[in-house]
Image (cartoon, rainbow, N blue to C red; front, side):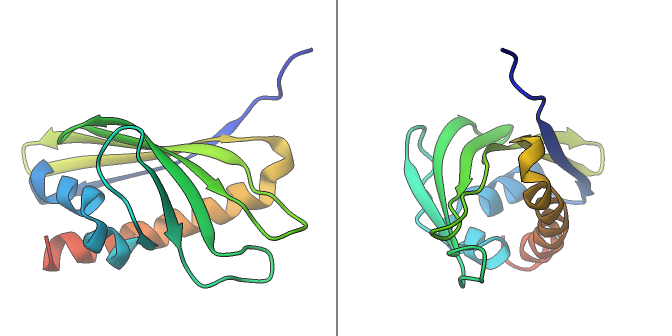
Length: 145
């Protein structure tokens, strides 16, 4: 039996800021709360944390995560399990941020991998959500980090 192919949401953007500014916004809990969600994140491999927002009819507002990889100023990866409500469960995916220095700042790539065919709505929602999150991240990096 073969496993169904998975899909990824990928968002890439060039920022006119050094990697250290972006890294801070990706790993500082207070800054993460400003562009992504409330959280208890700590930049330590194995740290289990939650991202939290207001619940909706199809989601309890909680995403369970675990830090999987940290390469300071280069790469951050964590699991992402948006659990849903009693009747639904979301996909278990992995979010990876990759920072690459450029002559004018930093190229940031975010990939959320692992969407199976039965999670098409989650896949589409993630594509929309990450565009919004990146817009907020850009504001936070410019104004706060």
